[in-house]
Amino acid sequence: MWYAAAVGAVAAATAFTFLLRGLMGPSISLLFFPAVILTAVYGGYGPALLATVLSTASLAFFFVPPIFSFEVGTDDIIRLAVFAAVGVVTASISAARRQAEAAQRDALEELQAAVDTLRKVSGWPVFVDASLAAGARKVLEHAVNVVGCARAVVVWEAEEEPWIFESASSGGPDAVARHSPVERDAVAPEPFDAPTHYDKALGSASASFALEHLRGRVSFSGIPGTPADIVPLADIVAREVGNSLEQLYLHDRLQQIAIREDRIRVARDLHDGVLQSLTGIRLQLQALADEHGAPSLISDRLLAVERAIAIEQRELRLFIEDLKPIGSHRSTEADLAGALEELRSRLAAEWQTPIVVRVSPPGLAVAAPVEQTLRLMVREAAINALKHAHPSRIAVDVQPHGADALRLVVTDDGRGFPFRGRLEHDALVSSNAGPLSLRERVAAAGGRLAIESAPTGSRVEIILPGVARLRDQEIRSSF
Image 1 (spheres, rainbow, N blue to C red):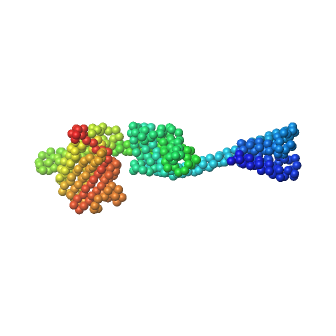
Image 2: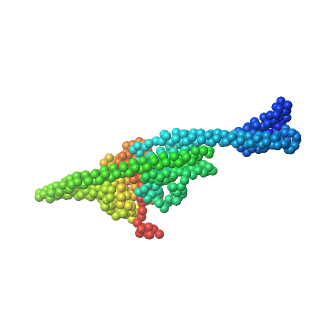
Image 3: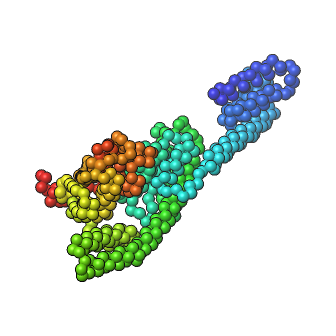
């Protein structure tokens, strides 16, 4: 287009020079300079050079005697050469000025984009006393607002953990998902140290971060249009996401250290205080039961109380072992039916109420920590019913639920809870209904609690995910 404009400008200069030839005298090149300069300013060096060549040819052919001929004298050759040299210099200067102005505009646009990027990132939130699970989602939601995309996903690994962690600004209920190292390629197809990448066709970008304790990659999807500053913006936002995650990670580690120290202190206090006191009480009860002349009925009752305290001491010792950060736990797999039967017999003897425990299939086994959690849940649900509902009988049913979950149901024929009908876990939390400690224990184990209450009794249902497993011989016998 600008080359055609150069031809048109030279043609216009030629026409006006013909018209004004009588007024211009010897200054026949006067109108050709604007043609060269304007072409150089708006079209660049190439069109300006073409305009210079055409102007020189037009002057030589139309205006230097003999006209309509390229036969010119020596003096006229020098004049045309000077005009051509001036035209070339003028075109070069004008083109350079045009390039400088274009470079200045680009620099201003880049500066403005950098300022906009800094303005977006300057309000990055600081999370204080927030857990990693609670803060990761909020960090990514803010990253989405800064980048202006639809969704952000971060995948990272910690220096001391073998797991790959993943979190997204929207999607599933898990704030932070944990994947095994063998799933790395599926979770993080791009290497953590790959350069910042922007895919215009897919509207996606990704950038990495590497800090002292964490390294990972943030992916942005649903980026509208083709923003020019998306690559530096994604790079900066990824670094900010990494910094926030590292702060949350360190905060979590400090919390875990504090909790571990508190658990050690509580375990020591329980062992040195409560256990020793219970031992003293047992010795006194044994002495009273063995006194000569004591009625046999009273002696039997005292011994029964002493045996109940001994059982509670054993439970307390197991609880203390679980409190220790590095404890000598029992076997990795526990017989759930045997443990619950032992608990059933003790509670039935203490409360003089029939209790039935059914574990299906009979060989159902879980890890020892899970067995301890289940026993505490059954104990708490049963004692809560015995204390407040005054039932004539209680039934406990445990069975697998789905592929890898466990269902625990405790039913009684007592007076029920203050509410009527069935309330799921979220409804129990929002209305603060049901036993608070049991609800918190279930939530801490990642489970769900539901309660049905009626004037003729109640039904407490607990679903614990990812804990059920059959013994090998039970699995083989099913085929």
